Image: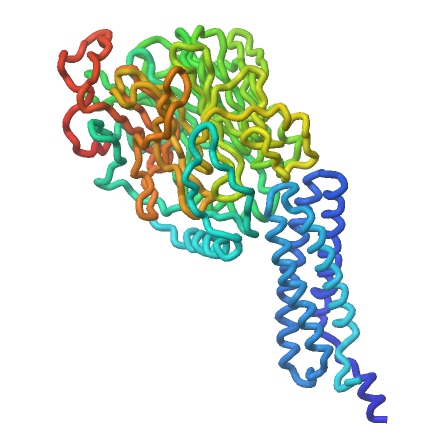
Length: 142
Length: 461
């Protein structure tokens, strides 16, 4: 009985945290799509769009990273979910930063690293958002 | 003047780039001449950016070889770039700063202020100043504004009594009478020049020896096509313009940024100094001095130094690469050659036959290069031997006191150097006139008089 209660006890993330976290997905995804557009069309403007989308994603991701770190130290977050969430956000932030630097190169010099990093950061942002919105199942260690 | 915050940023960027670049910037021994050593392209995640802190000259002076003297003949100009010595010995100075390239990427916004830290904070004059030394004592006592309200003037040429000025957007003409200190009216437009974006805005210019044509250099609109191929229509070219009609012919292409043009004396051959591409590492790609062949293609953007393909350009063009001409003479990577003129016998024995090249200095290199005027010796109409420092001491111990741009040889035996950081015009003369000076028109100087006065004191005006 107690175990069932605990399993359904989801800790919702702060609304600001939630909106910032969710918004990283379309930004990282937009960077991936515009990188793919540049890859196929050779039109540089797509690459410029990608650069700015990454900047936007990184601003949000940075704030989310702070939330994630704070979450590690808050009560009842001894779960593996908290750590996994933090690591996903950290990885998205680090790879996103490297991706921003890659996009600072001129013209085709960004290829193919740009597409690869944009794809990975998109997947990381999706996974982190999934996990973040699923809530951390407090005490529900399988 | 110290600007702590941008410089701190520079230090940070430099530090980061040292961390991220796979290896440091070791100076390559031989990047001069016809066959420079070209390493493999390399770039860390951040380009190396080092811009030395600007400092005031004070009592300090640029260094010149033994037997030569340097004086500042005009100070407090508004970004002097190129100069022209008129038949009566007056000197015209083109002053201004051009370019209206939009910041397209986050990188543009970050890199802009870092590069700006190494430039003057003075606003460009958009004017021509005239300097006159009426009594031939080496002091240019008259400094007047010859023409105003120009648009980033750069190239200057005189054909007969027509003075041509290459603004960043158009070639214009003034009527000129000898002895004039002020233009008699507004300029007349001769031809439009490509000016959209103007990433590289300078329009270098020189006249053909017969006075029939003007050659105008038009720089590329990007480092390496990062503003799109569409932006590069009519860019990275040298035009030959008929000043009578304004009609132009594309004379040569693939010259990334031809910043100064000159005709080798005694020939009809056009020569240029060209700034090559950045962000391929500290020792790529050498800026160069080359004769310009009519109809020739010099590689940009598809390849560098002949047929070395630049992978950053997409789509590529193997046919163009196959036709790319290798330039004549490498000046070293990132030196930023902005000035070119050929010497005359009156400059003195070792410096009588060859080309002077003004080097503005690097930004894309951990170990700065350039920041001097070099002399490239010539033999039989071709460069022969390594460049020799002619004016140096602009960059000492991490401080930058000046940055040379245009160099002009005064046929009376002087080199005029425009410095766009300290906003000064420098004049270098042999201490002893090597040949009897060409008789000056009116008041001929006393026979055995030196070309310049002996007072070594800094002329602060």
